[in-house]
Structure formats: structure tokens, C-alpha cells
Image 1 (spheres, rainbow, N blue to C red):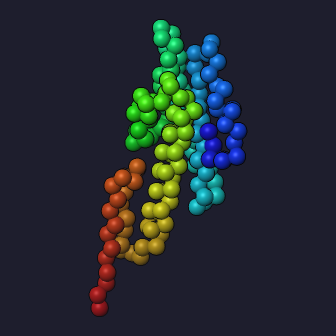
Image 2 (image 1 turned 135 degrees about the vertical axis):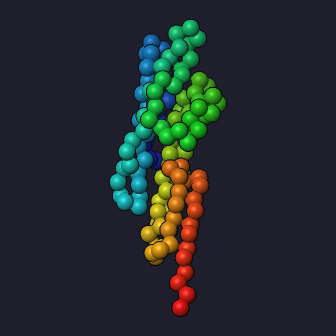
Image 3 (image 1 turned 90 degrees about the horizontal axis):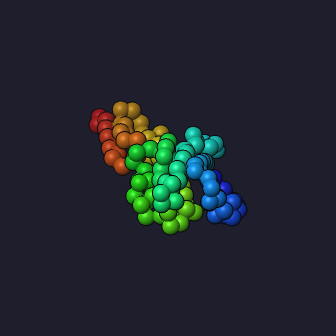
Amino acid sequence: MTDDDDQDDDDIRDVDPPNDRYLGIRFDVFDRKYSRFVSPHYIILKRVVKNDNWEIFKTTLPKFIPYRAIALKYLNTDLFRFASEIRENLIQLQLKKNAFLTIQESLENPSKLDYDLGFTKVSINILVMVY
């Protein structure tokens, strides 16, 4: 999936051929701040033979993206919704990252911004020089 809203949704909805054992989904997110795509993420799904359901076989998604919870909710009921929810989480992460990096760029030394990879724990240390 890409961050292109003009994409034809039928391309995603028709990817459930009955005899395929594996299905790969690629997620591309565009970084508007730097006008480039960030590194893509992938999910490879594997069809379980005994019940014909999909399961996550491999992924490059960060662990802080709740892909397992999203899979439990949508993977075998609405594949399009599953992929859309993952994509939305990746876009939100990129927007949050850009917002905090913009703040970091505006801080003057010795002030600093500390954060975890998911930007869920952010600390801004502002040091003011008093004369």
C-alpha cells in the first residue's frame, strides 16, 4: 500500500486468490517533511491449510505498531481493512516523528529532546541561560 490516495482500491480487494499460500503486503509511507519515501515495511501472510485463514508469517513492522491486535480484529474478516489499519498506524508514526523532529530542530543548545523509537515517551529538556 502506498500513501497515494488516488490508488485504485480494487487492486487491494482482489488479492485473495483461493490457491495461494503466501501473500506479501508492502507499505510505503511518504515523508512530506523531507519529500521522500521512508524505508518500506512488509508483512508476509501465510494461509493456514486446515482452516484456510491467514496468519502473519513474517514482518518488518516495528514492534510498537499493534499489528497483532489489528490482525486479530480484521485479518480473516476484512483483508483491506487490516492493511488500511496497519498503513494508518505507519502514517501516524511518521507524522508524530516529523512533529517532534521539527521541535527538536527549533531547540537551542543545551536544550534537547529525548524520545523512544515509537515517539510514545518524549522528554523535552529546555535549559534557559539567566544573566
